Length: 334
Image 1: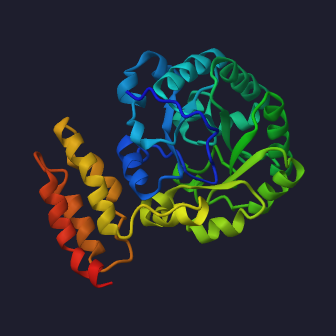
Image 2: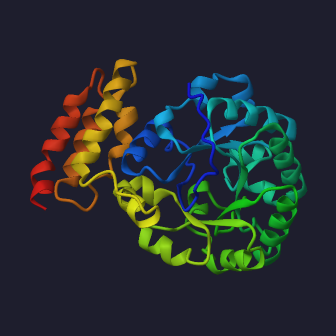
């Protein structure tokens, strides 16, 4: 269990989005070898699960993952306050409230994107959390849901929640359609409206506004957020993780930690070895590495070897070595 809380306010110029079933502790450990500066988020953790469940299994993390923030889901101010206190005790440097997830399971629990329709309740939730913790409380939201007019809904939502003390909003620049579209479709079908998010920042310059949704490269992110405070990458960071390897020099003015994808594998190896020793399955870790060599010769073979052999009982680092042998000659030649 991590018990270290960073003293500084998180640097949100680049963050990796909370993504269910993807950004677990093994994914975050891998992303951290690629970038030391990006803020990493957990998968959404439901407040009641944090309060009543196996906390170490659910929200435990390695201090080496820092800077790392937790995203909570819920709509009961008292429960969110309790879960926030627990998360702060684990060492998270930010508590983020999910007001963007459109899944049926989230809707049935009265949290996620449906809370865009209840800004006063969100304000009560964040106020309770702020009273309970000393780390920043932030919100990740959509620009609206269903028939809402984003020009009205987003601005009214931010005004109400900011009045409760939130100063940092990450905005997924798409509507969420709670009826008629699947969660997967909600990530791609509703059109992006980056200009609306920029207008929000222009109207509320005192707030930190982070852009999320559809950003595929650092170049695109930097271009689209020139007047904003930062970018949050989601699927692009997961499926093509090497894009994170230039983040430290391009956004944080620091040297990049790695010179090649092979170095990334080597840097992640001690973590793999340590976790294997604790009984973690190799596949639970290597599934987050499948896209590392995307666009490179041998990438397909790298993915195939890891996908086919890492899930087998007793699989160990020899699978990594075999997969790496399929790409190392080409990587070095490049």
